[in-house]
Image (cartoon, rainbow over all chains, first blue to last red; front, side):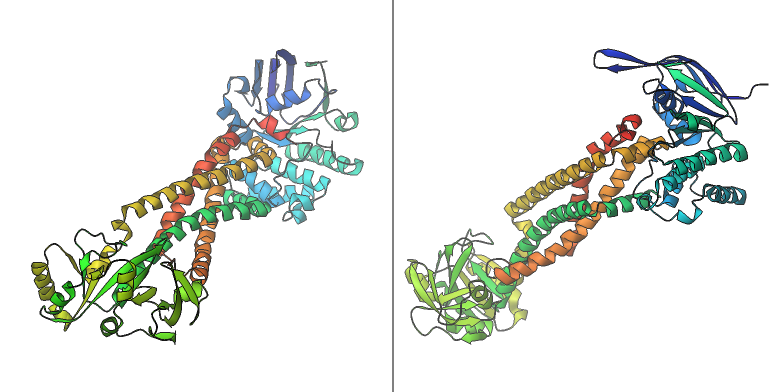
Length: 227
Length: 364
């Protein structure tokens, strides 16, 4: 029996740019199973980033339906989508997007604070997070600010921040786009590890076929459609 | 956690923080200095009035508490006052404006010294020649005068004969007769100071004087001093309110600019917080807390700057102005700074709260 975490049906997104309508998504259908690691590939302008933003609740769809964990994002207002970002989704961005004034540890703590769980509730939770930090290899760098961390380290801290609240979905947008080959490989292996060890569902946007190869399944997009 | 972010943000942009807090501090200083000068000048006037050593003050009919009216009382009144029961000494003065808020006071040195206990000369001595003038230490310091220095006022050149300790009625003294003559007020007085044989007879003496001189304004010196306050000077109070209004506007503009810049600088960070699920209220709350901290730091700066302005005033213009520190106004000035700052933070905060997360995240 299917255990779909994400169900997308006829998803459309049209941007208005001046007097012109830009159709970024023209009817996307996609199902992602719980525990799956999926890569969405495609050239620039294919609509993969728009799909990422809609799945992350960062923007509203124009039409169609998007269900995450049974909740329909297309019927949600701003405040409900803000709650989705807090409770269901974790983001990893190409440019890491850590808060520059806070240490790595505080960046992670901020995500917990915003989610309303500034302290770990149980010993198991604390232990789980400790092991995750070990797995990510950043446990010894937590008190450094982003500017003192390498790109690879920043991305690993960003991953730790993304999963600290146990999101049902980890969304990664070109997570290796700013990294050299060695660090790219490390980050991708970590994503695989998180998927395999923790059962974390991951949807990764990339235009790099080598990165996409780490996923269980690759979905290609072109001109706002899955091909 | 949010407090930590606020503090780290302020530390991270420390130049902006220091400049903004300094600007808020200037507005606090503006209020506290004005209030301090108002209170200080009036306080000094009170102190000098007490320093005359009198128990009772007689002013002309219809005169105001603080006036530079010259001489509407006949000098004959002195003899009458001296004849009243319990009066030990009575001396008259004449006050002549010499430009700005400054004035010269004509005194009868002998009776004035008897009443006040005498000048304490820091250098020089009493009048010896017709062009001699006595000044107090503050005036000497402000205008860098010493014994023998020339002074120009009332179309004449005077020579400093003595510099006295401040606190006795006025800052510049000339012989009474000379001022009466030069101001065409021969035989006239501005005020009469009365010293009693025993202060316990004050009520009786006051009652007798009021009975005999019903149109004159007769105060005990304590009554007179108690009326020298900001509350009895409506124009000064209005001026203070105007300065408070200006301070609110200054605070508003400073914080508006500072926070507006901060929001632009931090567009990406706001996008990051939004991607983590931060609500508009949380984003607004961060800026409001930053504003409160800036305002508090600014208030502390402002209070400290006030000690600086007091030092500068007492160092450079002690003869014209007097400033005291008025701690009871610290919370008022801080509140004014806070209100102005919060008003200034509202619009930038609203912009930040409403920012589109995708646009914010792609901000370079």
